[in-house]
Length: 125
Image 1 (cartoon, rainbow, N blue to C red):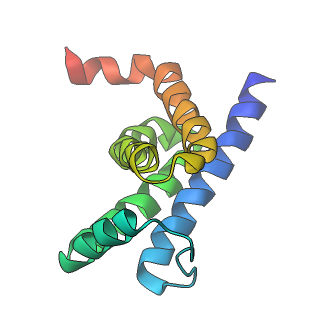
Image 2 (image 1 turned 90 degrees about the vertical axis):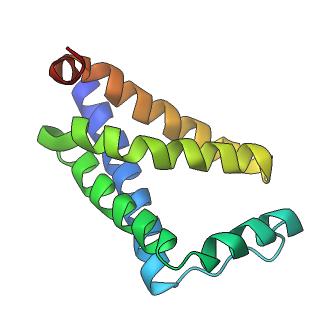
């Protein structure tokens, strides 16, 4: 039962990040109209760095794909963790209402990392 729940959550998590990554290249989701001015300013600054959004989008797509596949889920969880921390911090700073989605996603990511802890031991020995 645990494996089925983890698979469904991992599938949804991975698809959300694949969608977010593809949006960075294809711009098919417009930004919300009620975005705070400070957030607009920060996003404008990020857009000035021409390579940053394509890099984040690529990481989101690769990490999301790896997260869906059970055999590569541990690698996907580690790859996507810095992006997930950025999502949580951005929501914490600018749009606290977004934490209702960001925090459960962070918990799924941390659950996969904890569940895969044996696979990471060679990296830290």
